[in-house]
Image (tube, rainbow, N blue to C red):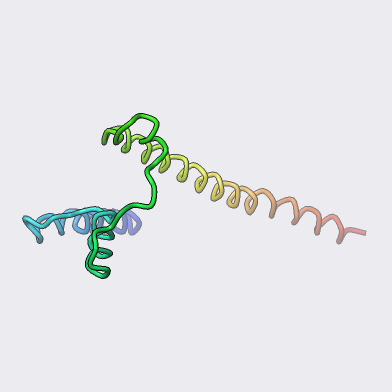
Length: 114
């Protein structure tokens, strides 16, 4: 196995251990969301129950809470768009370096010739 192959294998094993380790190390623990933790902390500091400032517009339109599946869909779409923007940006930078550098070298070489 090549050196790069060993690095990839060790990295994959480390990722799996980091992802699954807490599930086995903290059996029975509650992995709650940040919304609940924030509400609990505000109630702890102020001594009053947290009241949201507004109701989401989409929930007002449908007259209730969004189903969990729809929330997950919106989150996945948002994540996909963000990844697309980042991938486009990185691709643009790599292409600019790859192709932009070659054209600038041609320009400097052509300027040196009498």
